[in-house]
Image (cartoon, rainbow, N blue to C red; front, side, top):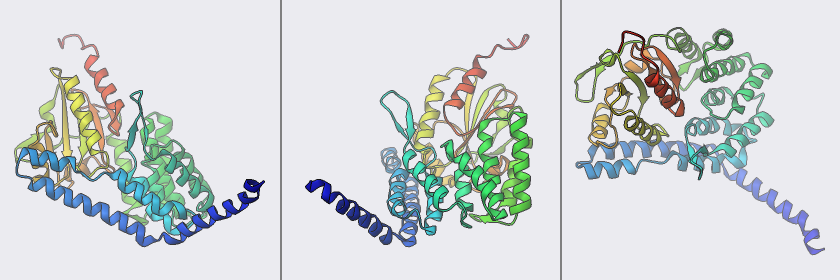
Length: 369
């Protein structure tokens, strides 16, 4: 009886605690988390560049800021206040920093580190902010989400929002999200229709300093020149030592062309994946070629650690080469055959290795033995 009588009191106390937490959170707290993460990355990059010995470099690299720590801190700030409009901007930052963050399972598989939080965030957007005029940054952040439900949310925003400019941004995000699902004619037609809507309705909308028109034009370029079956453009540049480097030098080999940088949330995982592939395909006509947009000095210092960056890299601090491939999010991997034909384009992961394996094991045409 005593417990039964006090349940309403405990429930009310819990509600008061939640309201108190929501009231104490603020945009300034969210901005502080973002700023601290950026500052931590800059300090880490400086430590890597100035390390004088291999041991010091290895220690500096191992001290790389963990994006999961900052994502968790951001979630602590915004989660009690998800009903509030101000949380949409930091929510977009949270969504943009969490793709690729995965937690290993005992059976060898992995799951999204923030899967439950992303689900809760998407539910809050659908419940409280579906008509908000501030949804555009969230839409673009959802374009890189690995949660399959993000596509359904984007489609709901694109069809139900009252503001056509937000509809246009959602259409762009859907077109970008569909890119990961394949290149069949039906998907291509849908992507083109969505990109046309994005340009018509939202051309001048700026997100993170880039207009929707520019982002949509890049997506159109990718459809035309950088999808499966196309011949990948040549790349001409130099490595971190200033030595000339070109993609054509690897003709006849299966190539994983990897656009990456040390500031990516999943940089460590990607480098581990590359090392594993190089070991697996050792002695075969296979190569990993990186395009890295760190400073040249930072790339050079990382390459001094033989166990860390084991593959040749174009040094591209000005993003000249990345622009030729219209790289919008990092990391990005292409798998090319010996003639530079594209067989895969997307996030680094198991499909990169599967595609490379299939190409290396494919029967050679008669006369090529």
